[in-house]
Amino acid sequence: MKIKFLLLIIISFIYTNNLDQKQLDKIEELTADIDLAKDFTLKSVKNDSLITLSDMKDKVVLINFWATWCGPCRMEIPDFNELYEKYNSKGLNILGLSISDTKKQLENFLKAYEINYPVLYGDQENIDKIIFEYGGVYSIPTTFLIGKNNKIKRIYPGAILKEYDPNMYADLIFNIELLLSE
Image 1 (tube, rainbow, N blue to C red):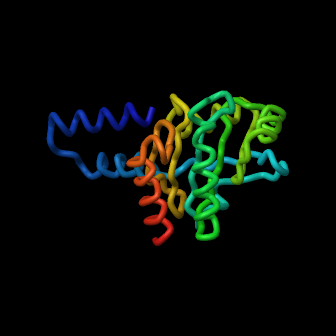
Image 2 (image 1 turned 180 degrees about the vertical axis):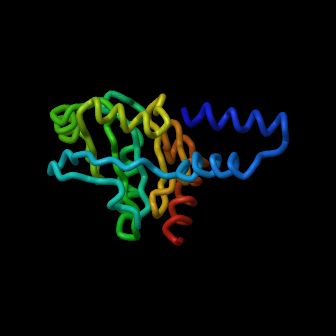
Image 3 (image 1 turned 30 degrees about the vertical axis):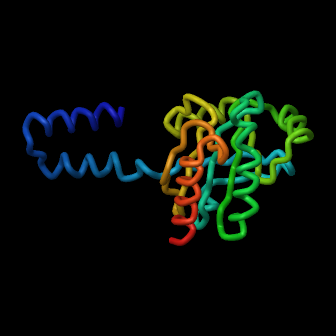
């Protein structure tokens, strides 16, 4: 609904080239929180503790939408472990948000793959709601880099692999360091 209204306003602007204050205020209202990461609470596989994104508003957060059956997702894990070890003490949190795995599947996966950052899970209805709120994650892996105050700074579709795409990896490092220094 919001998108249709916004498109209507933009189209009217194109044809009339004048927006009154009421229209400008409505555009501002509809787009004010467009870059804010939607809040969620999910359980961590390791200890079933609840993790809430808004509790990390003073941190830089990397949210990685992934699944155990996804090859490129598994390939990212060592690089994310390295990032977590290097930057966690400086204020970076990494959250691995499983889009389809049960707690049991994740526990079995963690027996074979070491993941040092929190791996999150939830019931499918809640996961689907989060995916929708993040614009519909159409492929995995997809990673969101969120700055302080829960503002989405960058979206990385596809695997972020140091060895296979050094430019994307360098972009990620640059943006993490930039956000941590703010």
